[in-house]
Length: 271
Picture 1: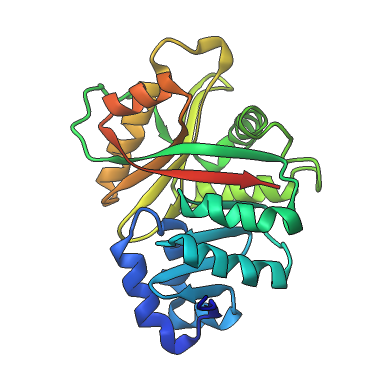
Picture 2: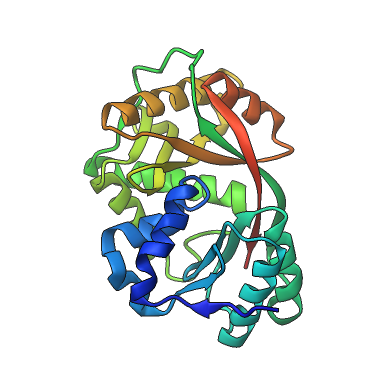
């Protein structure tokens, strides 16, 4: 079997072509590569196998991988040792990757076997909520608190456990300062929140969508999502993607009403 190898600076154009051919799948990897250019490859964190690449950092992110590439990336990952907090990638290759890694890296804290990757391709059939706005620095406390609640619900553990929440709070502030954190408030209470995570010139990832538990089932999340899409488009975001668990049928239908359609399936492994 052909072995995977570490990408070098002179491989940048080739890697970039892979990223540009797969702008949705490669969004998180592109968010690292685009700002740094060829210098990003000097860290040794990007691997290649044919026309597939894999970023090994805080997350392990295979792109355009088939089963052979997945096994080759697993060999490198085992040799390096786990330093990531999650594996995120398209099916079926990521299932093959995790099966190869499981004996050395397992057990996982949680596995999302099948998530639906959706892309905003319109038209949106929902009226945007005019009360949704970009979060301001003054909103940090309430935005952070809502983000912690969202994380607890989705992941099942607290993001404040290892350092009292300092790093998670910094990340919340970065999102606010970058203008990609959105919320609707009622007094000091956050009613709805969402943010754009990894962003490249060709795609941005919608994540952290959350509605206060006491107010769910009223269409707040759907109208809020429509508002985020509208605000993002005004700033020139060309394409927005998201991932939703396959069993979350209400959320999938809500996103479809906002103009999203399913384009692929992915798997997430959490440590």
